[in-house]
Structure formats: structure tokens, C-alpha cells
Length: 296
Image (tube, rainbow, N blue to C red; front, side):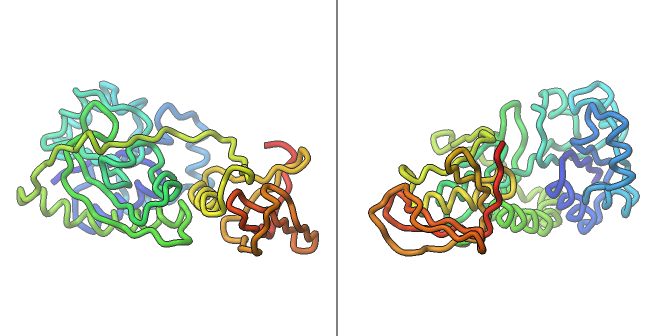
């Protein structure tokens, strides 16, 4: 079976490792960073290559260079190489139908949530932010809409109480690496039956704003805890005090009691760089190891 991998970062790395484990013929790898890239990407790849580029080099895989997945050149490449499957993970472009239909078998997306819930660019963040106890991964056929194609395979991943967005991503990425050999075997043997998604259960969340200030007068301690965990490592969370912004660490805070002084600072400690503030539910939280930023 011939396969082309299209993706970015850790997701792409897991796809490469999974396909190598399955002894698949990888006809090429298209990295998101190289689409419409300048000579700076070539320099970055040479000086400080990412994990996906390192794997491409290690396994001597074709590092594809196309301006877009929707380009005539990419379509011609798929036809010329008689590619069976295009496997996609983390990509910013919407695929055109003529590209989706070009591989001999299918164009398949790997989405890091249990579809149809949590469609969108960052389900790691959203599942934690919404207090879910589990997430997962979905292999699905691609169509012309985002994350809406028929489901081929799903696997569940538990979310622990202190998991950050990064922790959840790492668990799901590991799960993807392990699932690919099974998935490819099932596809080859015709064991997978595509199942349409339930549109009534579908949810979609767009990219979040870069502004992420905690509102202690309106947010409970559990809501704040979820927010700080969910946004890490993509968008820092801040405490704003008198025009200064203090960056919160996702694992350096603790419950410090109860108080009726909602939204007020009740303690400071310059040695531990800590501030204790009362949340909307009356629970006082101490944040340690704060870093000050005057502009964000």
C-alpha cells in the first residue's frame, strides 16, 4: 500500500512512526511548514530541524515541496505515484474535492477528539476547558467540510484531573502512533465500515483569542483551574493587577482556604513570587512562581 502523509509537528511525527511500524510504503511527506515557505524554512531545517523533519531524514523519506495540497502539481504527484491513501493530521488548508478523490482508496483525516464532538483546530484545549473526563482520536474519511466525514475508527483516551492541553496532546499522539498499524491492516482487509456522523451531536470551536486574562470576580476556582490547564502550552493565562500582568504556571498553584473577599488579593509573597486571590466561589487560590509581563 502506497501512502502520502500530510501534516504538521507532533501529529505528523506520530503518523510517520506509525506508518513505518506498519511497513507501509511512504511515497512522500508534505509538511505544513514548507507550503509557500521561503528560504528561511530551508535554513531552519538545516540548523534546528523539528521532530518530523528529523524522522524524514532518519527514514530517508521524500520531503515533498508543493505550494498547496490543492495545487495541480500535488494532484499530478498523487496520480503519478499511484497513491492509495493520503493521511492527514493537523493542516490549515481546506482540501478541494478533486484532491480528496485523487488517491486510489481515500483521503483520511486523523482528528484528536471523539467526533462529531469538538470539531475544530484545537480539541485538546476545548475538551479540558469544558471539563470532559475523556477525549480520543477519530480516523475519518475527508469531505469538503471540516471534520465532518464518515468515521472509520475511534479510540478513547482518559483525561486526568491535572492534565494540561500538552499532556492530553501527548497521550493522543501516542495513541495515534499505536493505532495506525491496526488501522492500515483493517483497511487492507476491508474490515472498516464508514459510519456517518450524527450532526445533531456535532460541536465546533474556532481558534481562541490570544488575550487570556483571568476574571476572579466571575470565574470559580474550578473554571480557572480548567482554563489554565487547557490553554497550556499555546496561550498563557494572566493575572492583571494595577496595569501589570502576571503569567500563571499550570502546575504552581494551590488552594489556600476560603474567604468572602471575592476578586481580592489577600496575600503576596515576593520571595516565592506568589499572589493569593479569592475566586468567585469564595475559594482562595495561591499562585506561585509568577512572572511579570507589562505588555502582552
